[in-house]
Structures are given as C-alpha cells and as structure tokens.
Amino acid sequence: IGLTIPVTMTGFSMGSNMGIRIDTPISFNLAGMEANVGTDIYFSSMTANKGSDNLKVTNIIGSVSLFPFSSIEIRTGLGFTPEYIEDYIILSALSIPVDINYYLPMNLSGFKFALNMHAQRTFGYPQGPGSEPGDATDFLYFGLLINTPLKF
Image (cartoon, rainbow, N blue to C red; front, side):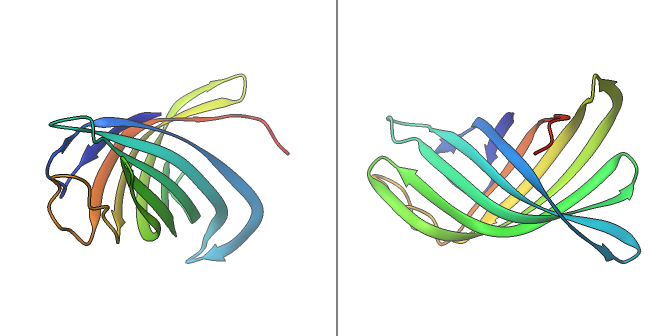
C-alpha cells in the first residue's frame, strides 16, 4: 500500500499503489546469502494533470529477494506491465523493478511491517490524448509493506 510518483512522465502527478506478493518455497544461495523467489502483482495509478486521462498500471513481476542484513531486504526482478490511458493500451511491456525494504522492529501476532522504496523502469508508454511520445515509463513507489503469517 503506498504512493506512486511519476519520474520521467509529463502530464501526471502522484497516485496510489496497492499489491500482493506471494513467496514460493524456491530458494538458493547467492553470494553467501539465501535468495528467495516470488511473484509480485501490484496496481498503480497516476492522476492526469489535465482532464480525466489517468494512467493505470498493472505489474506482474517474478522477483528474487536477498537479505544482506536482518532488517534490510533487496528485491529485483523482471516482468510484464500493461499500461492504460483511457482506451490506449500497451500489452506486455517489459519492466525492471528494484525494491529496498526496511523491516521495522515490531511483530504483531506474526504480522511484520516494512517501509518500501520501489524504483521501476517499464519499456513502454501508452500514447493517450495529449501525451508526448515516449518509449519508457519511470516511477517510484513509497509505501508500507505488511507481511502476514499466512502460509499456503
């Protein structure tokens, strides 16, 4: 849950971000640290500065997480990101995200909380009404992660 901030896109301002991460039981050793594999699905929106042509982004990312320190997680991956501005769409634009999560020193009945900074480059940009040509979309997310104790 958090805030989406456009970086290289003109005509848009901050919006919302919400998603879910599912960790898999797949892990391996990378540079002496345990690396965990997971899938992220999150939805973002950025508000148009003029009109109602808001940008909506759906991210489907396969990612790998590392914990270089007990309270710091670094996660990166690769995925597909459909982007929408009204009726204009780019299907399966390639995305490369990088996350840095700081886990707060609190645990409430198995629920853990972290501050999240997420940077993402998506190699595609929908050409909506009044938008300038572009071949990539860059944005930042700032938010709060809530890890649940639920296991499947």
